[in-house]
Image (cartoon, rainbow, N blue to C red; front, side, top):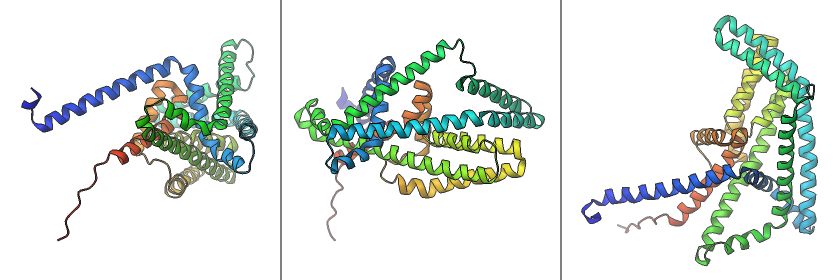
Length: 351
């Protein structure tokens, strides 16, 4: 029967079968990840942490430090840095949260006079944000059993992820052998190459994004301080945190900064802040991203936005944070497969 079909139709049918098989396997894997998210989440966070901390661990190894000691020192350094940064960011957001939300409410009232429901929605959002910040700051500590349970789960996840980072760093030299042991011998080279390409993509993304986020936050904070915008440090901290959500995070944090400046300092300052935000984004897009993340897998912005949307639908904020590095890893694997199975170009006979 298949011989009766034209060659293009048979090729299309074969590709449809392959697509259905890949989609089915991907759906099952996603379902398993959702079901076992208590285990999958720390593993994914640990992989991202290992990719970010790998250079430091390798440098200690080159200094002839014992692998276990090097992994422990790396984890301790991260706990100190991340803990300190988390405290600074949290304190900045809590201390300046009232100023930011007051400015947002004022902006909502001003916009409501001109645009009606849009400004009213912004004022409601600011009011809810203020209540959330007050709870986060501990002023409503009584009767928050659910909140304490969530915090406990987050701390347990973070602790498990840090322990996994230690083991991943310490035993990184055995990963290749373990990966080869799980697959047939003939496929060992291909699986190793795919794993290395995916890990390199995630490592480049994590290091590049962290560096870009730090530069963006510093530049925007300096600009807000010069323009005397209230809550400048907290807004800068917000810029750093949201920078791990490409494109969307910059839009959200920039919009908040512009609204705060508009509400508290007027239209002129608001336009200046908009100029600062746009200038930083231009520097990021034309200088920082090409130079810092030149080794990572380049993805079209539309692909990034779709990945973020899918991640948000599956796992909320955590899914938004994990979507892009996981997509980068998938693109790394696809790139390796294309390199291995690409058809050689036909040689042209010299005339």
